[in-house]
Amino acid sequence: FGDPSIMGSAFAAFTSSSAGQRMRKHRESLPAAKSREDLLKLMTKSQVLLVQGETGCGKTTQVGQFLVEADPSARVVVTQ
Image 1 (cartoon, rainbow, N blue to C red):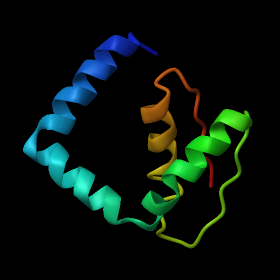
Image 2: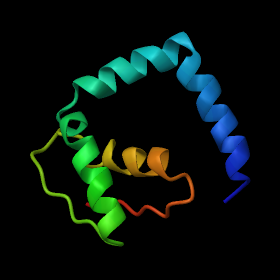
Image 3: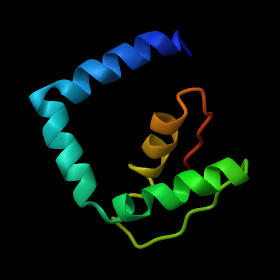
Image 4: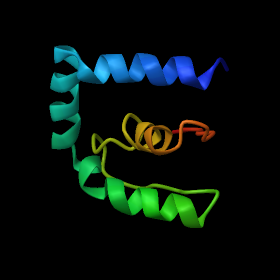
């Protein structure tokens, strides 16, 4: 899957760019953002998480990103 340090460098460069800042603000406005810390705590307690929520809340697009941002070596599978 590639060198994690390269991904980390690319991620850091993007998040510091103006486009990255706009994306961060948008992500923070999504309903999933309110549950980010709870999801990360649950991740430390269990190898498998099942997430249920309303359509458009960020289950598919945001939750996996939260997990990988918290642990770049995490293996994340998102299904619908």
